[in-house]
Amino acid sequence: MIICLETATNLCSVALIDNAGVVSLRESTEHKSHASQITVFADEMLRDQGMKASDLNAVAVSKGPGSYTGLRIGVSVAKGIAYGAAIPLIGVETTLSMFWGMKQNIHLTETKKEPYYCPMLDARRMEVYYAIYDSSGNKIKDISARVVTEDLFADIPESQSIIFFGDGAKKCKDIINHKNATFAEDFRISAAYMHRPVIQALNEKKYEDVAYFEPFYLKDFITTVPRKNVLGK
Image (tube, rainbow, N blue to C red; front, side, top):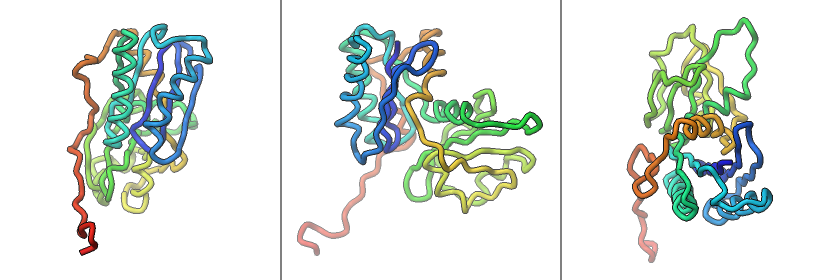
């Protein structure tokens, strides 16, 4: 079995998976709960299965892009488990697991052309992290951070349908101008969606270096300077 950690957004999600699928899942949308709940969820799930961390085949984590703090917490916990239990560490691009989550939950008619999939993560203000995949999970456009404008997807033919989803897509619905755009507003990221890429990585022995692995932030963390000092001046 493999334990999967997803902390790239406000959702704290932990899944226990095997070759057949998801064995157990714990999730919380409580604000800023990652640090306090992720290890609790992992411990509960292992105890329910009568397992220890050292019994796992690997630990997997969503490596980004996404929330700077969330990614840092998830990767730190994953590295701690991998090091302490002497098991492999697997990193999965957040947009790739989002793609598989959307792919397995969408229902297309037989006559409808396969769409492109555009997972989007909120990068604050009007900026998003996104990538574009075809129906097989191949990247049409690599992961990037962009400010959303009307013509951002002008290079996608109007005849090609494209699905936008994720917390970044919600704020773009009224801006993106594409004839065959669909917005899946009910999509929510989950550690359960890491199953396919994680099993593939395990079978191919594509592991991260526990000592040197870092989250894929995509852009530098920027702090803001308050306009007023502590005296309110």
